[in-house]
Length: 225
Image (cartoon, rainbow, N blue to C red):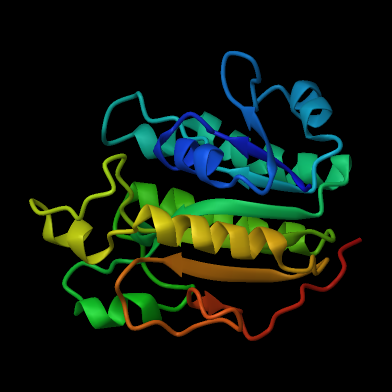
């Protein structure tokens, strides 16, 4: 059974994955037991795992600045570096549909967004940082997938008060199917791909028929010195 480490495993998405990914052995990496910003601690906890899902995010400061909290950038860099040093072959990085400005778009176009574009705020820009660093660390030999998650809620009900959240709603069953597909696919060292995780869209699918995977022109990052 594959061993999967999940940072932020007690959050909304993390708790859904812990409960629903029953075919994997899950290790939660959360405060106060594990401080991801403490590199020696993180490195020790990562050893022996097959994959790492990074969900942890600091969001307790002022609304305008929470996305730019320095710990968010530190954690992103630490998990990529730690995966390389600990021999974890695959990293799935949580990004967001906010990394591209989809407001005002027809719902049918949401799933066809490319991996580049203008974010719709500081939060989206911070998520783009995680995507860019993923490309760099793919060159270090990791298999990296950045997932732009749509709107996930604990109740698993379609949002009705917010039109944007309704368009980008992600059901639990679709979230679990995507993550299971990504975790069971053969590891491809040096590869980078994007996925947009939104339910109920006309999808440009991958070979497993689940979600649109933006393969960045079948990019295989060159080895870095």
